[in-house]
Image (cartoon, rainbow over all chains, first blue to last red; front, side):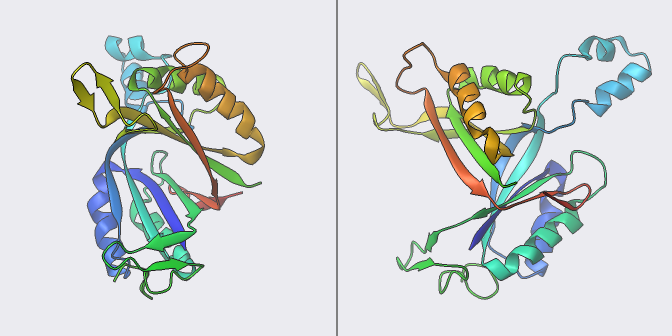
Length: 136
Length: 110
């Protein structure tokens, strides 16, 4: 089992939700607004404003990177579904400019369904994760 | 080189300081998540009032494995409220990351 953790743009959450559902990955956890910064040390709005000579934009230059609001989604899937999940997220969220986000794939040792208490270990997640990668 | 996910749960008022020292140490990429939780002390008692869950900020950053000790030291020294530290200063959890993808380019990072 793997946990796919993705940080994506705020306005892409609905598209991602739909695309994942169409790909057969229905189980999904989204965390509300998170704030983050990446490698990009430049806020493009401020840079653009400064180029046009807006004094308030120039005043903000050089203050260090700003935190950008993002959505954080986590999806637990069996090993053979990781590739498809990652691909789906990339296809839906890719605009080609920086700030599109990152995807991290983390190992999961064990999953338990709360309703029945059944526990699954190993790569496929057994009964707890069904073949579609989603919770039954 | 394999990567690690460092999740630091720190006091909300210390989050900016930790973010700043991470930036200065060369780790600009951080995600900040507001969370609520309790620790070993089971919340906080102030007189008659008990707080079961306390607000914290979770800072998530992914780093190369070799730089773990340095990052942990950076977070620790910024998040502590005093030299000896206090209850409620937080925890740091480290877990392995298998793959990292950049969405804008679609590239899997080494």
